[in-house]
Length: 112
Image (cartoon, rainbow, N blue to C red; front, side, top):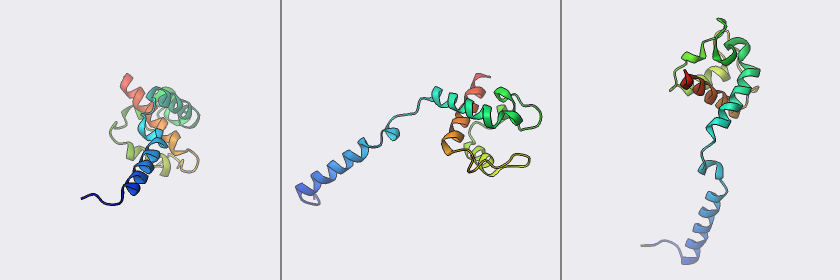
């Protein structure tokens, strides 16, 4: 049995279509290369002094080339809250920047 009048069903269908059309970022995957490039820039300006250029550790910061590829949650937590010698970057780096840095790290790891 259908619920609502035909007019109500049309309004609902219109509203659902409008919502889907107004959220293109959810419907289209991000360009991974551009995301990783943005991450490289953020990494270079915010992370490289401790973690090394191109993720080649200087011995001071954690060697990110060995960071577990399937543990983004741990990465985000470490970046935002800090860990041991690493300061917390919460409020300094935006979520988009952290995601881009993660994409860059994965790109470098994949190239090894």
